[in-house]
Amino acid sequence: MKQNLGFRAWYYFRMGWSTYFAFVFAAINTLTVTYFLAIDNYPFLKEIFPSFIHYVILIGLVGVPILMSIGYVHFKKSPSFRAESTVAYESNPWALRDLVNSEYNLILSLKILQMLNKISEKDKSNLSELEESQKLEKELREFLNNRSTGNKLDLDYFKSWK
Image (cartoon, rainbow, N blue to C red; front, top):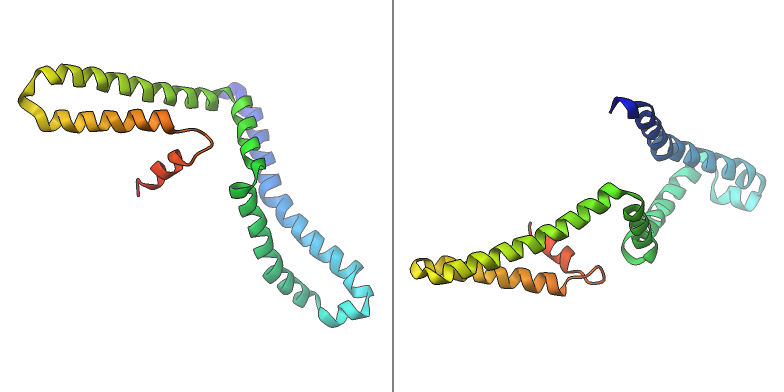
């Protein structure tokens, strides 16, 4: 970690700057510039926004919900976020390794479960546990066979944990 200290600090600086400082500064700058260069110079706009405070409040009441809607569309309805996520996995070998390892863990778990079920079928003393294990094996096999990045099975399963 010590050899990365400078790059880590640079990364934290960029995140703090772009996520917080630049966001707030840009919002204040945009409101100030648009009001004093545009609205202040046009009498019909000055009637709608008699003061800077009125302008900020109205833009906040109208602009914030619009921007929230745009953000929702970006994450939930637009293919752009999926493309961003794909690029993030392609460029980050650790995240990609986690994804691949989790897939292999699922396949390995299924194989172990299948082997345990075969062993348990010979011993009929725990029929209820065997049936439960076979049911779990069937669910896991169906889940692995039917899931894809295009359908919502992973999300549905995640939501069912609540």
